[in-house]
Image (cartoon, rainbow, N blue to C red; front, top):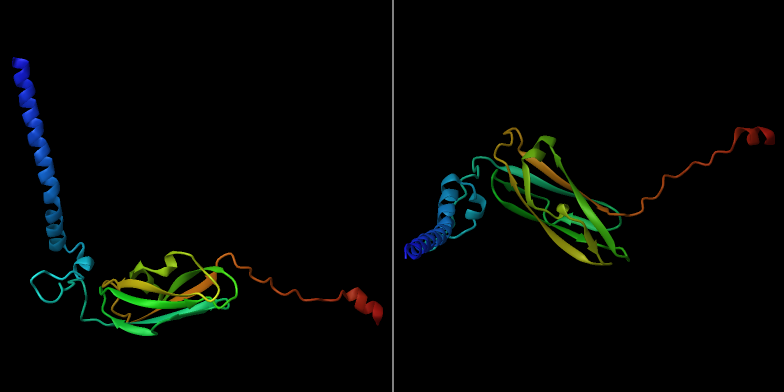
Length: 198
């Protein structure tokens, strides 16, 4: 009989622990959201959410509205295809989430695989130019005549030196596994052959 009572107590304790674990699991979501809002950890995603019952959006407190940086976009193609930004420049505030689009078309009569490599000017800006989404992360295969538009989503770190007012983001698009023609070899006649003819 005592053994049965101990089993009942143990079962009761396990049931309480199980209910407590489920309650804690459900409470984690609002706790996480509250901590993120208080610390500003997930502020970029928060800035895009519209509060229910309120008009407008939550302002991103990490945006430095006292500064404006001009970002210029450049495109270089190593091969016979078209590659260009949809816009040549825009002005952004440090900390502001920004999206631009690059356009590409394979004008060759064959399938090709290509990838882009970014570069920055001035060089010191590269450490503060944070890309969240970029076509340069992957290789792409395009059919003959196929067109693509790719976004670049970026944030400029507010810690960027105040001396920098313009950043140039440049991409070089090149064919992956493409055959680069060999350098031309100069044809030089041997000196002995020339002297023998004279």
